[in-house]
Length: 418
Image (cartoon, rainbow, N blue to C red):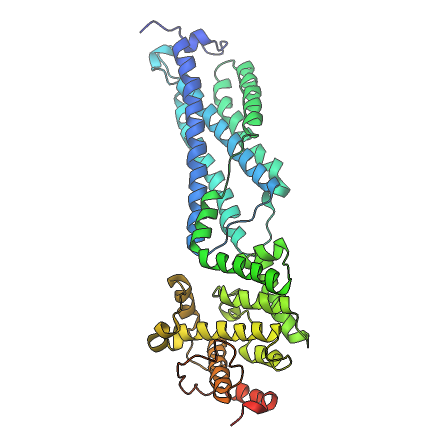
């Protein structure tokens, strides 16, 4: 190993004093560290998104501006980390090359502490954008609002890395050259297309494949049979779980049944799709029921011709209610007979939602109203043209309705009373 020149306090920093080999080794070392850090954090955040989807959340819907700032923030943070690793490599020289006294012993400690600081900063960003973003009540536009402010964080960390060097050696020109090179490098890399959320999107499509396929089939059928076309935003909302626009669609669709005397066919179809793609808890445990009631569906069914398009789709809504109710209340005796194909994930959500045995619980009321309507209408021979009522399966006597539903049905549905 060739002899190295000793670095004298406050001398100019030169390549010869670092060593040509160590100089280039430090640059390669810094690039490698930056690349590894970028890949690690990028794959880590992708894994977080994947697990969030598996836990029942939507894929985060992030704007192009937010994606750009997130990517730029990670790139600049990685470059700052690579810069720190490069400096650590340059000055990781035995103490005999520093006049017998290692003036740079604190640099190693500083760089390791900075690594922890990098991770803390980015973990904070991940928590804000990945976890808090999942709640539709919280409207976060973190990167759109504070994007340029976040870029100041890696800039600060970059200069902190050089400050420790400048305290003991003249390296201001090196610092500014490194900053310009880092700036140009970050600007060039920022134009490289790095696809985010792809793993989560693929997982979401696989986990919710049945619901996504069902939405596509119903949208295509509505266009072909009824000449009804849904907007692209509505179709996306129907495929989502608990995004803000999905919850708005639930509220809007349900509210239409209570405020309009003549409900439109497209609203009926949307409600059918929403019930079929049962999502479990709506906002929280107290607001877990997000759909119309079976009685409300029959109230509109009585107003239209038995074989009209509206009647067919309203009967389809009753059929969806019937399938959901059978899953829990008649699972052992009727699941095989009705050939239901609900996957285990949706079945578990249903079992979890039917948590209260009381007749006032929303899902219990839904089931009791459904069984009452299906049993009574089949007994009266009404709507036999629909598959729900022309089945050969004998239905048991439904459970008694609660007093509110019993009185309401007696007042509004006299034809169903014995």
